[in-house]
Image 1 (spheres, rainbow, N blue to C red):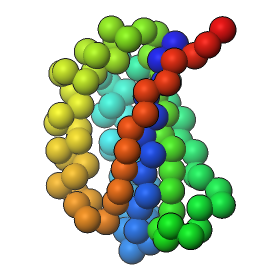
Image 2 (image 1 turned 30 degrees about the horizontal axis):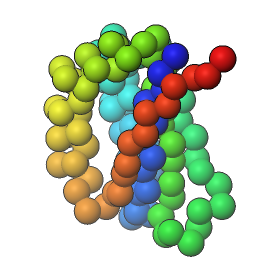
Image 3 (image 1 turned 90 degrees about the horizontal axis):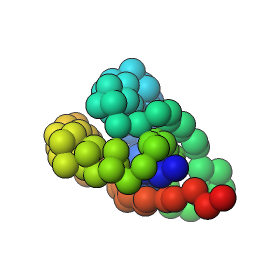
Image 4 (image 1 turned 60 degrees about the vertical axis):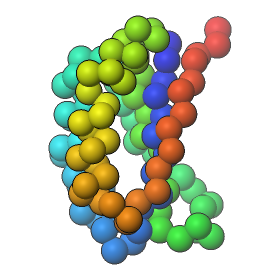
Length: 101
């Protein structure tokens, strides 16, 4: 299993709007790509020093081929939309994880 993790720190001034948009638009759109089996969103605790609020959004897929399909076909448009909407109000980075049995 591959987990695509997106860590996002969002400014307080747009936090509520961003969280609502993530839950109602962005995450459902990513899931409609058909590349991921499930998603989870976590609030990161104990990160008050960085300012804003930090989240980990995780998308799980069966294998690397599914993730690469997402990266090639869908990710550029989703990232573009995300960046246009929240520009300098958000800092994010991505991590790719592989489940170890």
